[in-house]
Length: 385
Image (cartoon, rainbow, N blue to C red; front, side, top):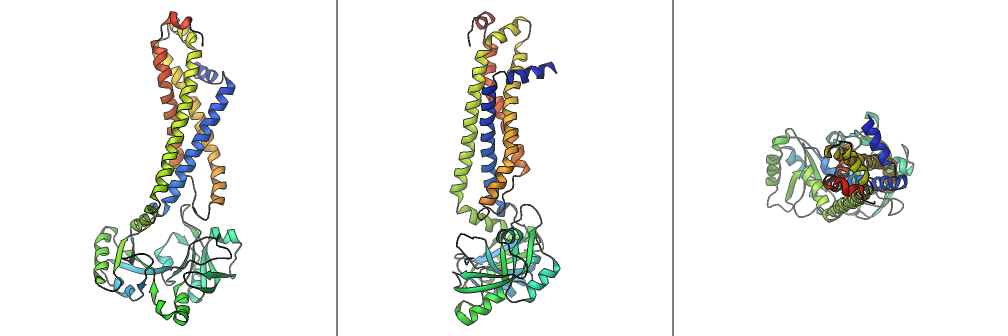
């Protein structure tokens, strides 16, 4: 117990230096946790993808559509339990800055394919029974102050014109990592208007969502689906939902790499700062270390004393950084909700921050430990910090 008291007293002997070091460590850990959370949010779709869902799109590009008639053929493939479909709608709500995903979906079974979207049976029934009905996530409903029964008007860009929808359902996520910022409406409503205004674009969907009975058969089923439409006017590419989401992330891989590099640079900088602090402290206390050696304390005791102070200082700064990460992340989430709809600090990030803090403290103590163990008593007693 006395040993730990000595470590704490040594740590706060130079209070201003200690406070500034703790503050610097806290800021570094705060930056590291936020950057790590940004990366987690970027890969959210990949990490939460279901292994039992496949996505079938046009083999050329996502911007090319597929005939609605493909659904019945995909449904006949052995191992397939259900097939849904969707189309990216785009559009503008009041102002172009108001961004959220807007999709036309097959109302009959879309929410069965995505059990992570929780919606009441009554609201789901109302969504299916009305042509221009829509369902929105809880976060965007709260953001724009919508309520059930409201009419929401979007100005089309991919599909020109004014499109009016009636909010019949509000879904919430089954977990904290579920995106609650999406907007869904019935594909039938889109197709119905296209048949009147642009018949050549009617009867088309953006992609199919296929639920398979056994995830182990995903590769075989993907090949079977694509074989159905080989050499057709609209060949397909079928892949797992995880691979489909990873394809979008790959478009911004350079940004993710840059964020990772910055996070490690931040850790490197604070390592240098803490190492310098411990080196200064060690030089100042050389006479004290000599006295301890004279009293019979060995090098192992000095090692533990120096390492304990360094680790205590580093870990304390890390804990402060972790604590302030939560309110900062909350503010960040509100400001960046359009681009990172799920910004939640994972417990693994917290554990990583604490381990990083411990590692920085240990690494910073290595040089002072080496010097203290090599110094001679007479030389250390003459030393002036």
